[in-house]
Length: 171
Image 1 (cartoon, rainbow, N blue to C red):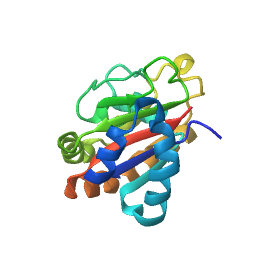
Image 2 (cartoon, rainbow, N blue to C red; image 1 turned 180 degrees about the horizontal axis):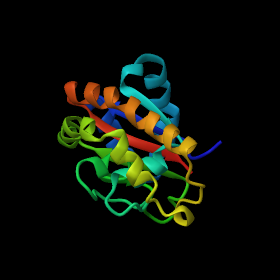
Image 3 (spheres, rainbow, N blue to C red; image 1 turned 90 degrees about the horizontal axis):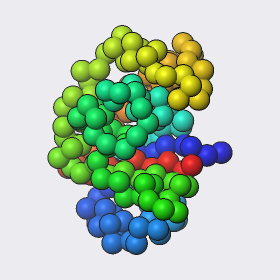
Image 4 (tube, rainbow, N blue to C red; image 1 turned 180 degrees about the vertical axis):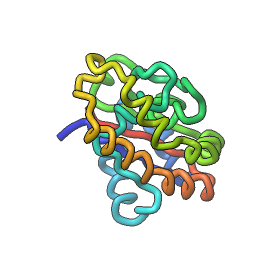
């Protein structure tokens, strides 16, 4: 099953290893090294998004599009913002990795609770359904909101520990 998004709040050591890994080898480094370590030993610093990340990004950006960039900083940076470590180059259509450095994580953590369910719902139902390629519904909204709302603790933990965050998704 593809398109499952995950946040990792990385230690400086793990971030440096990732950045030193060649660009085309980064997805393998994450799946073979980081996932094992974080899913088993650092569960406080990992958050699974399932497939909610797509609609979540569209709700947090100004334009509702699924594109790289820091549109609507800092909340628009949560998914597709920050530094693109993989996913926007030739031969990179199988995976996405974006990096939010610790200063961006702090900005996100300080603003994330300002998003109300009502505002999120308003943005959700403005998503271009054709571009989203999935029917907009109350059920999908609740699913997306639930994953967003439960991510708040993750962002606070990452900020308090002064960690950078990567968003990853296999395509």
